[in-house]
Length: 181
Image (cartoon, rainbow, N blue to C red; front, side, top):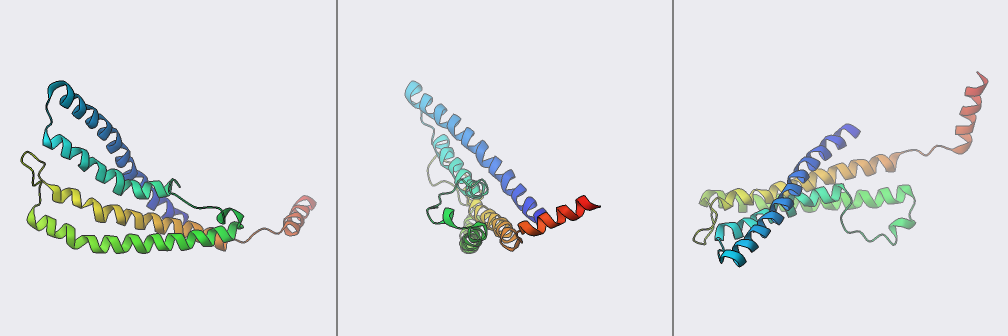
């Protein structure tokens, strides 16, 4: 089970790395746009649209990545009071809800993306970017990635939940038997 979790999270990490690079590209692009606008009075529509195009992979691919690294928002005032198994049970429920939401949004977004591909949708603005339909593929991809992270979280929590605690007396008895031989 650990191998499955590692493989799923490897993919999340890989695509999350792409989101991190998009953050850097966005910062640089905004700086260029500001310089062009205020120093040269130029504001290319394509560069402004590219800013929004870079926000999409940041948000959609970064969603699963942030969950993997536990950077999501949690309200832990009760969670911290639970034992290890109680926390694992809460995590299983949260992972299953994440799975359900991710799957529903992935499923519902496919016709939307398909329609965009059929229309070969591009920017409606003169000088805007073509190929908007390619950008829209990030919607089902991002939420499918969220589903994969939800599976990894559910499996990890399940491993913790079914883990049998070592009884102190049993552990001491094993140590005594090992020392006697």
